[in-house]
Image (cartoon, rainbow, N blue to C red):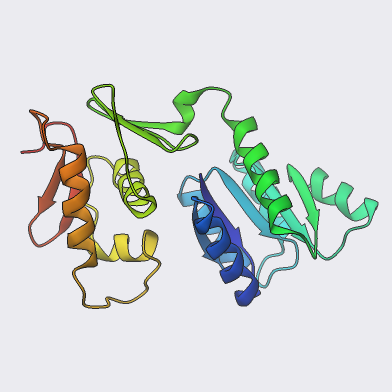
Length: 226
């Protein structure tokens, strides 16, 4: 599951992102309403977690704008305002669920998982396929040619990101920011090592390699890689 957290409290946002990633999900953060709106419109997420009180654009205005532009991504609104009228206002603005602060992470996790399931009544919306390689984001199962491939959590996130951008060159910077959460290059070979391990698992023993290194640019996964 891929989530966008729109929260101006950086400590709270970092905690939530870390907890969601430890639960096996991909999570990104925007720290103000305008940035969050731009990212939510430009990219695809399974669920948005939106704080009600945000700088530059408040959460309810953000959700209303998304809905007016036809964006139906499920939204969980977070707010210190937890009275019945506050919750009703949030839901009427276009939110799919409303959780008052302070909250227990276990409850938040359960709520976003329910929202993701509501949006995906069939597996086709939660499955990536490239040739005979298949990745199911909900079950965290990867198969190729019908054979199950066991991946470590980081390998799964790496493959998910590559398959979500199938046919496109994915740069080291993109991988560092979206899979490792580094906003700088730590000058290590961590990406090369993980890509090598992933390639050995998804390509070794199969006639057609799918994971390709694009010299001087990054990596690409596509049907017919040479």
